[in-house]
Image 1 (cartoon, rainbow, N blue to C red):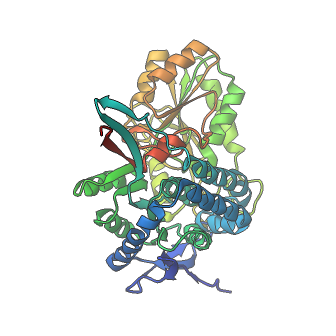
Image 2: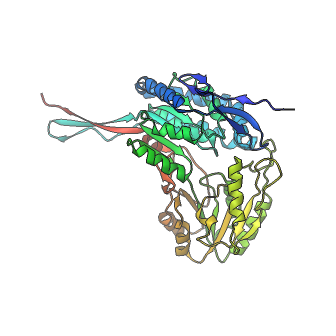
Image 3: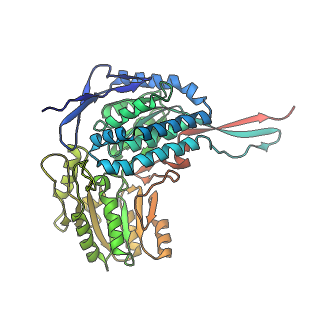
Length: 479
């Protein structure tokens, strides 16, 4: 029995289209390793068409009132709720994620985030108008930047698309968004839903590969390029955008330290770390993957974390007992496996460290101890269900180890000492510091990093303002 291969299409100017030259990409299920769909391999003609549509739609969308944009986004949020089961099915097919967890952990925050930005559309605040020179009044206008070229990743295809299009649309911009070549299905479904609500050309979806994304960023039309992806991809986008001085919004990799002091509750900390480290197969830039434990509790902590890993299950999307599904693609399975295969002799695999089954890209929950600060697996992002553990002697060494990587997105501190927690939150060089928890996000608070984790903020009023520009208007008040 053969599975019917579906044909996904681009969404440009209010209609679904194949690539202009007919080229396609096979989309492979990470659960079965079988092709379940084809999507367009968009080329320059497709990029031109999408950008032309977004540019043509921009003036009218820009001139809508904030209340009108709010109403449209609220309709999108309601529609996503109504079509939740369809979105869950598409996302699970995309990624192999457990259906139950996608239903509970992704749909509610996505809908909430869209509603947040719907409200933000009506709260663009600026400094007060005033006379800073005699006879002249100055005012500040906040305006949309224009067409936004957006590239979403494969780890959270739906949610990261929301993080990009919701603030952009709320601010009055138009959008051309590209999903990853391995996970286009849910974004194409979003286009079907959103297309019933927004004017044509305001929201466009281009499927394709890295060359498609590169053509979008290099295109002269967009005023802004936004990407969530690898450091290498971010560097390429920044370099390309610099040629015509485009704005760039980058959310790149992470290597989150989890600093556990001797007064931490071991059982609660292990539970929190294992959940935040293995969720979504560790394919999360904020995942709790790099644990630093005070030497006095190191051995006990490792023992308990290994037990937690052994009790964590990966498996099929419809299995309600699994904590996570497969890695997203064959290349990612190879990357994660490679880190374990290249471990130095002083490292010890305490749990996992191997593929699960002979079909699908499943990888066992893994814990590795005995590592040194300059080891490859400490310095580089694994992006898999692998948690490393290091030992530290005092607070200064903990800070040095935590900050001693090129990434700076997220971190956490586990201690009952309030003063220590406050010192650590000051000294940790990361865009987010959690205390006695790890990974919760809310729409009202910013998400974004420093160093090679990129710049610009997602979520919050700060993320909304990233999609606006500031104009000074000065007028004479003299007769």
